Image (tube, rainbow, N blue to C red):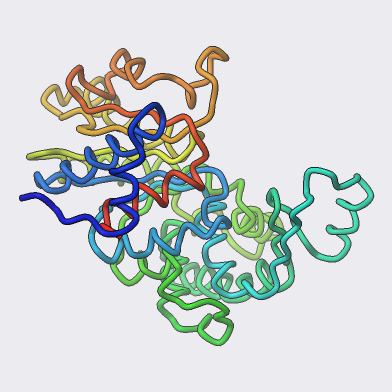
Length: 326
């Protein structure tokens, strides 16, 4: 059945006809077809997509079951919540390219950490969350329990402790939408995030134990179990925003199952799209063309493959708008 296209989708269909623009539409159509045929989709978030406020549209993707699992960096896990509770205190610096080292230091001294043109307010963002996430960590440790990083975030969000601080419409928080659905999340390398650093500091001071936090190995084992249970039928697609560990970590679950656990019938990822501006010729895995992944046992010959060489903050919302028929 042909879908009647709304404003954004109709614009893309009419004008996005060649080169990267055409690939955007092709990838969106492929994503749409994958879900229509009963497939499931993983979205991976690298970069600073939460600070870019991707949550405004990703939250709706989650609510409408257009994504079944997310892999993200620790920064993206926490920065969506920071935006939720401290948005009014953020500072935009349009002329960020021309700041002197002295001006950068002044931002630090005033409690701002810069991400391109957006400065995150340390006191209102990091410290506002810290007391509440610590309560979740400490409570679990005292009860002899341990959870994944995202599960502690879910507990904090669902407790209602942060409602008093909300500075945006909560429907624009993808983490809140994910918590309400108990969406599976994988957060490789969580320790290099701000909350990961804070947790580590408590461990160094002897106030918490490292075992209170489930590890990356446990995340991989969790993902392996999830993939086995969800890769039947049309299979699981892989929609990668930017590169890095958020994509590298989860895509390896398939060759691990096939080669290391000798599950010879495990399906490959059944759709692949990456939005990236990384350069292939530099030996970068993030910039590798999708066909290279065939040699690593991640994608098959006939897997639909798309690579969009562009800015993810522009392209990802457009593709999601197509999926949501905006």
